[in-house]
Length: 206
Length: 177
Image 1 (cartoon, helix red, strand yellow):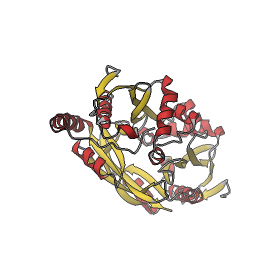
Image 2 (cartoon, chains in turn green, brown; image 1 turned 45 degrees about the vertical axis):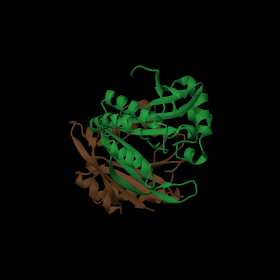
Image 3 (cartoon, chains in turn cyan, red; image 1 turned 90 degrees about the vertical axis):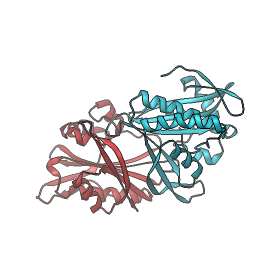
Image 4 (cartoon, rainbow over the protein chains, first blue to last red; image 1 turned 180 degrees about the horizontal axis):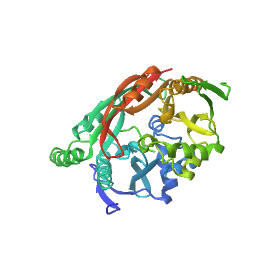
């Protein structure tokens, strides 16, 4: 893995540290999850109110290799991003990207920074295709992913149940990692020039 | 409650016992998977040629509900069909179906029979949607899954890599319960 920890500056001027998730982070990670609004927490893949589940989620499984980064401010985790890769089988060259940012740290460019780390890691691991899942109504996040070279691949009908019980469509966006990397570099330069924000993809993580 | 074991009479007359897999089936399942062409094993998420992985696969996993049926001919496992869904979160109403049949038992009607059995389980599990993924250019599998009533949701370009390292499209299909 690259040179970590890294110190990065958010749009607000706050400096946070990006580094791989470590075993000692269990309690801090759990606190981060528990501080999320209930609706955001529902989009995690596991019930993170259960300590044993959070511990389990930190480990690789037989099916999945998980590369995780956290953004840390002081002693607090304020963001988490993960690259989920099949250990076996015909999807080994693909990876799902997931990113969740603490409520108080959204719209500060942190998701963009963490996605960049995931891209680097995906490249290092030889991943060829990355994909993300977004609720159909997350149009702002979708626009940004498209700007990075992601293309809408499939609409999964009634694939997401909201906290209120409704069924919504989910959009799967995919991107060749080499295209994504090239476009991200361009976008970073453009953002530096224009000071634009990267809306946080709120769905996912864990 | 669906009662097992059941006996499926194949089109050629062979009698196949169908029942849920148990932890005692590790060895015959390992033998089944090892007997399959490597390409067929690729569509499983874990390396089923490893005994410890197979052992864990047959145990309950937190946050997952799985029903796994096997077809047995003589003393050999010759098919496996499963449905799995997360018990927590925004996708918990969606089950993923997987089906593998030994080459010698394909076109016997067994795949369709197992698929229908698993679909009955999906209904009993209160799932609202069942999904399946097949290699888009695998005409036989596509035909089989469409016979079960699945409809195309879309294609993921280049998502499948075969044993030779060539990329293929992955066809995603779904069926509402």
